Length: 156
Image (tube, rainbow, N blue to C red; front, side, top):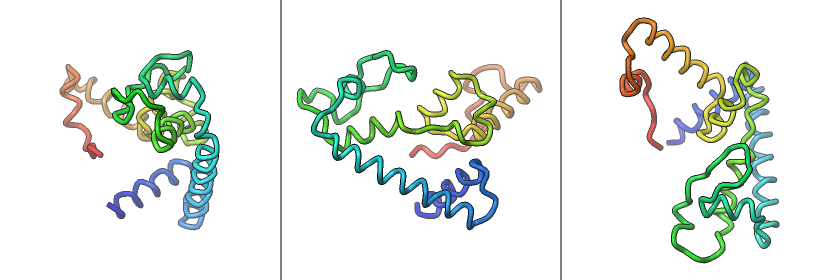
């Protein structure tokens, strides 16, 4: 688990343009610092949950450009206000910005939203699109289910 997480972190740093371990560590430290600060702000603001976040936790649609958010398992059927952990999870989805990553400028707005929602780096998304396109031209992909075998996806 630790090794897989470290590999993912290094891949993310590489996609962000880091080429050395020093640059990667600096990038990851900055990212962790921003995450801690964001978490701290969420804890401070957890007393008053904005209606926008509350609606997302209930699974309701609002005018956020990211669209519908699936209902959180923690908020299903509980008539209570969401916990601060659930609030943090929901708000962290909205805070995930890919605009600085390599390849983000090549994506349409819909593709950017998709990358943010499923938390995939633009470079990885573009590589997947490239592979699918090549396989379609070869004729080996004719339906959605044909694509599944092209990628190894960790279910976590």
